[in-house]
Image (tube, rainbow, N blue to C red; front, side, top):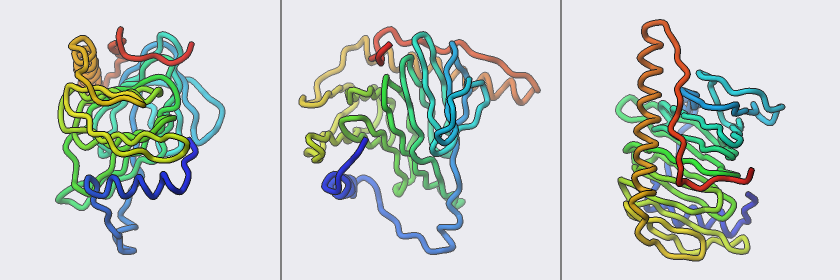
Length: 247
């Protein structure tokens, strides 16, 4: 998504209250480490690209970094574990997700993470745990940016955002390349471009929560099996109601 200077500067101002901007000394900057997302379960035949290279089959335990892209087709599904970059993400079928930036700074007392995702098609839903005040977790879509602090959420490429549980999410939609006023979406609400937050259906909320519970179980089972020298390929939850991308 191409953003003009008005949007970039506006976005930084809008999120200043939610994200503490820190100026790192050279020593601190050297402590910033590359983050990763690990594939813990999948269904179908999803693919991925390393830094713009040709797409190849995605496998369980594949490690993804900044610049990589995951692409799913109809019937595909991927569960990702973000480790020190916080939480889990499920990539739904017919989706394209770019990892814009995955990095973290481990200061011992707390981890400051920077997670920036670019959802270009389809939908994702995920869980973000409580983060250090200076951490950042953002999802770009073709029509805006969503900033998340600690919530279970769903975001689709048409920029519909739903909060199933947790803290409020801030959404900034873009019209004609210009950022609009930020919208706060509370737990149990959903919003789409041009609209205002409204109560989400119980079906949608339960769908997000059930999907995340299922995904976390697969991730937990995979980690358990690895400790004992085995591996598994899970059968992730496939959402019947979350938005889908184009076939």
